[in-house]
Length: 296
Image (cartoon, rainbow, N blue to C red; front, top):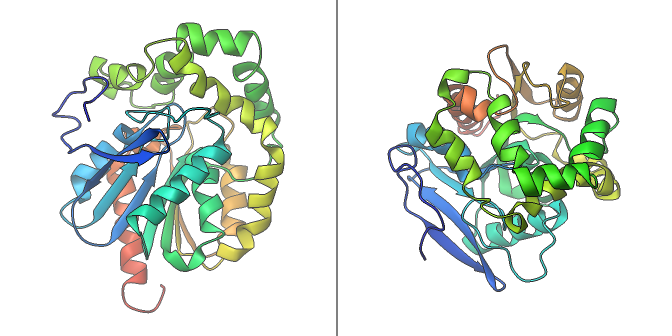
């Protein structure tokens, strides 16, 4: 397979892997050896989001980062609707195909509900979770509801995403607190996966699903008690204006009582960009807490 767009090889120096998925494919990277870590992205990001975490940890862990169909370098199959339910099904198939077991799952943004939909049904396969600025229940806060209505609505949201590539061009750089790391290479890495109006539809579907996937999100929330014993590292960027205040973090703390929490005053929504070093440290902490046979 050939990359559909170029990316700075110094920033993303990884071997591409491709898993056939129906008549499309899932692009992913699988770097390093050791305990397995699955890294799940949100909207409109892809495995590039975790590049610095992977570079730091690939001497200690096996790090697997897929791109959802229609995102990054993955090609969506025919008839794919880009809903979080479909992405979660694709990731579940991906996990089964790679026969992943006893792994740490890392989630942020839509990676939360996509990954936790698997987790609540397969608790025995998970060693622990690293969680950043995400949710897994129906939206109740007004800012998130308004965000869904505008960004995932018609015609304004549709026009912003499909014509202007708004999520990739504007929301991603504005969701990074450390402005000095927002280089032209970084901007291109997030805009190049969406070169045409049609290719940008997945970025429009996601925000609308905050409202439309209510029943699916309700089902995930009802299953969260099944993972209440899961060792968790919660990292929360406080500069996030996308509807993830500290009260959302507190809700996670109640659902995941085996948590250690770190509040980051120098990180926004894309914690992996602002503080990849601390994301890597949290993965190490999960391994340390669970590697001795007794969870600490």
